Amino acid sequence: MQTYGNPDVTYGWWVGNSVVTNRAGRFIGSHVGHTGIICFATGASCLWELARFDPSVPMGHQSSIYLSHLAQLGIGFDEAGVWTGAGVATIAIFHLIFSAVYGGAGLLHSLLFDPDLGSGPIGRVDRFKLEWDNPDNLVFILGHHLIFLGVANIWFVEWARFHGIYDPALGAVRTVFPGYGDFGVLLGHQFDAWGIDNLEEVMMGHAFLAFLQITGGAFHITTGSTTPFERKRLGPYDKFKGDGLLSAEAVLSWSLAGLFLMGVNAAFWAASNTTVYSPEFFGEPLAFKFGISPYWVDTGDISDCKYFFGHTTRAALVNVQYYFAFFCLQGHLWHALRAQGVDFRRILQNIGSVATSD
Image (cartoon, rainbow, N blue to C red; front, side, top):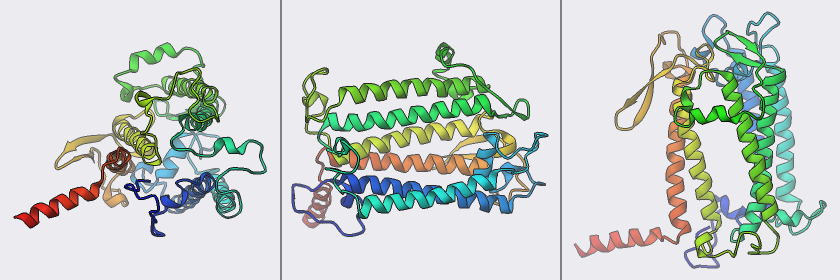
């Protein structure tokens, strides 16, 4: 947190980040608690959408964000291949149950467990104690995050392999498994990824991501250490590599930059791609417009759209995703400048000085 040179700065109760900045245990508690909130919102929203679902209206023309994603994963179809919502309630209830589990874990980390992760019931838990100015510590933790993300991608590839996902080209759920080794096919999509039109290449992309993430995770775990600033394999930690720049503000700014890039990419992808975002589940492709700022509009008949202010699920997803990304960019710039020592109070003081002199 930027203290502007005041080591004894205190923050109000509403500044939640100040409570977890230098306390790794509390930081974990807030993350797990946040996961519980997401799980609860997902489960409750699934049940809400399922209760309001009207089979006489296309799914993409209803408030069906969660149902649409589940249907795209091949969930909710009967043996004849017709979407009935079968199994959706079970998934929703599981999310509600796990939200309570996550909530309990968040409370344990926040109230009972070691707030600094200096010690704990699990051996060497201190290796995961956050030290914002220690690159070895940060990349060690980053490596574990990347491993879990890679495993999640493998899980998705295996889901498509054994259960199957919905193929809009066939109008049915089918199994998809392009393999884990032929990544060369992806080279032809470096500049037209949004135009991918078959599920084999979609799943190959996830397999490739799994390879990159697990390899990168292993690299970061093995090159990180618990000895501050020890860089035997990669050279000394100097100004060129960020010495004096690493901080909670800097890491937060990079995280927000990542959300910005993913959000913008997802918005453009979802607006036009009909292989991953099937028209029958999300609505027709959108048209890109630019007024004061970019936005997307529906291109099909939306006279039966009763929700999202009369727009399709695709239009709601794309526009919200894009502006969410836009505000993440503003947050990135704000925290990146603060991480470099910019004192925004001086800007206001200078403006006040100019106004007074006039």
